Length: 194
Image 1 (cartoon, helix red, strand yellow):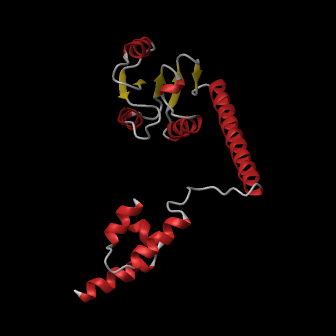
Image 2 (image 1 turned 135 degrees about the vertical axis):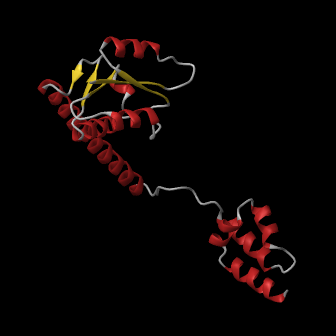
Image 3 (image 1 turned 120 degrees about the horizontal axis):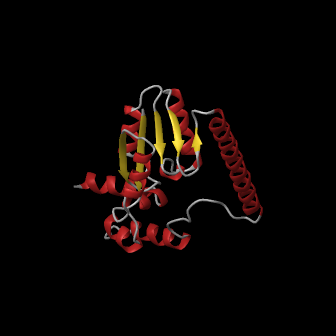
């Protein structure tokens, strides 16, 4: 049985073009999603995969309707393959139930792996070059050394509360605790005096 899957990214886009093509391709049942390709969970796709039985073929108008990335697309095809379900893309004219379609997907998989390796290598080279120049990755500190000194002076003043110090420095209590560990001891001592 041919099962169709159609997806548009936003509500102002329409599924009719995909649905017409899927119906023309002989799809007996069509599953639909209105969701961005970046969204992990797509109810219609999950239902289509769950509904599909061994020997069925999931038909899509274009491959980009099925996977949010090449890696995700390959994972989806492998999941379908494990279940004995083929995949057919109408625009790209790919059919994984044929040996030619399987070959194309293996080539896609190799390219995706190659791309991931290139990205990893470039990222590592960039980080190494930044370290050589004295730059470290990560977020910049929330408080400067001057702000930390000011915070510690304020915390040493018994008339100033921790909440006032947080408002003055424009940070949360947990951030203040991280930069000025004696803050917790001040609050504990204050609560014991009460």
